[in-house]
Image 1: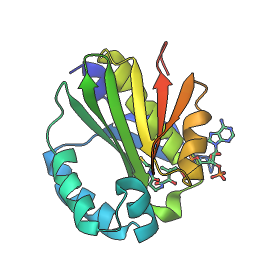
Image 2: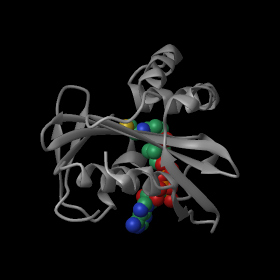
Image 3: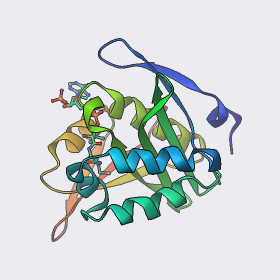
Amino acid sequence: MTVEDEVTVEGHDRLGRSVQMRLIGPPDAAALHELYTSASTRSIQRRFFTASRQAAFDYAVREAQSATDAHRCFGAFWAGELIGVVDWERTSEVAAEVGLLVLDPQQHIGVGTLLLRRALTSAFRAGIRTVVAEVLPYNAEMIDVLEHLGLPWRRRRDADCLEIELTLGGQP
Ligand SMILES: CC(C)(COP(=O)(O)OP(=O)(O)OC[C@H]1O[C@@H](n2cnc3c(N)ncnc32)[C@H](O)[C@@H]1OP(=O)(O)O)[C@@H](O)C(=O)NCCC(=O)NCCS
C-alpha cells in the first residue's frame, strides 16, 4: 500500500465545510455499522441492490478489514462523524470495482464527489487503470457524479444494471 493512502486528506463540500477523508480499518467497524443503520432504505437499496440492511452490515465487515493491495476503503468525516464511505476492490491487475454511499442528510453537497476522487486517486496509485461502478439505471445521482468527474467513461447495460466504466488516464 502507498504511504499516500495513509494520509488524511481534507476536502471542502459545497457548503464550505471541511471534510476529512481517511482509510477505514478495523477500529472503524462500529462507525460503519452505525452509518449503515442510519442510511435510508432507499440509499441501501441503491448501494447494495437489495433493501436488506443485513447485506450492508455484512459488507461493512469486509470494508472494515485492513487495507490490502486488492482492497481499500475510505471514510468521509465531518465534525468527527462518519458521513460517507467509498471502497474499491481489484478485479484484475489493472481494473477495480468501486462503490460508495453518503448519509442522506449529507447528500447533494459534494461529499460523494470528494470521496470518489479520493478512491480513484488511490486506485490509480495502485496501478488500476479502469474502474467500474455498477449502478441501478434509475440512480441519476450516481450516474451524474460519475459522469461529472471529467474522466473518459462508457456505459454498458445488462438486464437490470448499468455498468459505468471510467478510464484513469492520469491523476483523477
Ligand atoms: C450517489 C451518491 C453517493 C452521491 O453522493 P452525493 O454526496 O450526493 O454526491 P455529490 O453531492 O458529490 O454530487 C451530486 C450532485 O452534484 C452534481 N455534480 C457533481 N459534480 C458536478 C460538476 N462537476 N458539475 C455539475 N454538477 C455536478 C451532480 O449532478 C449532483 O447534483 P445535485 O446538486 O442535484 O445533487 C449518494 O446519492 C448516495 O449515497 N446514494 C445512495 C448510494 C448509491 O446510490 N450508491 C451508488 C451505487 S455504488
